[in-house]
Amino acid sequence: MNNLKLRLIFGGIFHKKLRLFLSVLGIIIGVSALFLMNTFGEAAKIKTLREIETFGPEILMVIPGQVRVTAGRAIQTEQTVTLKPDDAEALRRLSEVRLVSPVSTSSALIRFQEKNLTTVINGVNEEYLKIRKFNLSEGRNFLKTEVSGYKKVAILGNKIKRELFGIDSAENKVILINKLPFRVIGVLEPIGIDASNQDQDDQILVPVTTAMSSLFNVDYLTGIYISVSSEKQVPLIEKQIETLLIKRHRVLPKNKDFNIVKAEDILKFRTEASALFTSLVQSISLLCLLVGSLGVTAIMLLTVNERRKEIGLRLAIGASKKGILLQFLLESVFISLSGGFIGLFIGLVLSLIFLPLLKYPLVMPLKPILISTLLTLIFGLLSGVYPAYKASQIDPATLLKGL
Image 1: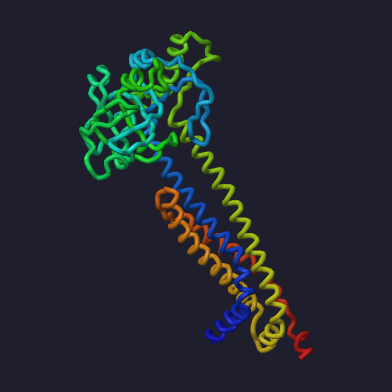
Image 2: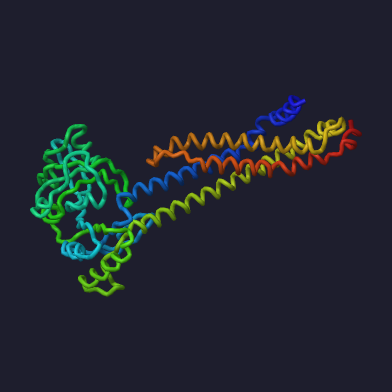
């Protein structure tokens, strides 16, 4: 008897395969998109947290001019030359300030033997690596005497090291930066893109004094990194920094010529942007699921009309209305779940392809699978309720008269 019921169910479903495929296409698209975007959302959160690690919650960055944080990236909309090395030393004297590094940034031409490339040069001091939590894979950090003594030494980003030296050691090699010889004293471990959206492997660090005097010929800074003793002290230190620099630069608060960026600002905007995009795509995915479920409803209604005589005969020989109702509900759920599982498989395959391709961490969270399966089940039940009800209300006597 059970085998007969199964044949009746699956025979009706697979009778017209093309129609079956078209009926579940919307569910396949909706579920795969929903899974993919949930997975990308989780991966984006992990990626953002990893990127923000080098710009921790206890770090502040003073940037000259006006700054606007867009999509989690601090963009200078107006630049000034009023931020000086003396400002960095004044900020160092504030209570609760632990580490300070002035920064002078520009690009330069690099040469080693026959190899030439252009990269970012960051002039920093010996405290910069501690502030940014950068580790060295080779060599050592700057010495305080090398910074104060205007020494021509350099620490290479991992990408620069590979391009110039391959697998060979870079330590103690001499490279040319804007035709000036610099001795390599260290190499950074691979870092990748950080919270500022900059590739930290594509850079060279040099003493800030050397960068300003020998490479860039400037007397101003492009930024100051500050690490405070505790995350709780950040709001207080931020106010102290603002008050001190307004006084030193002799400007009104409304006309201040600098901006202070915190990890909290970057994280907030990046999280909001990611959440907005994910919500938009999830809404489209749910719409695809809804359209797919309407397709299943239409197909089930068409199936009920085509199988009216079969249903009438079954009711006439003793089948219950409840049994007919349950059969068509099961057919609807089976069709929806089939589309759902195919969609999950496609979403999984696309995640495995695109997450590494776009340099997102490879994550397979349980939440998207559960959400997609639950929604598919719910839509499957909803799309089958009306057709199943119509099937159970067929009057066998009326149909049998026409036989």
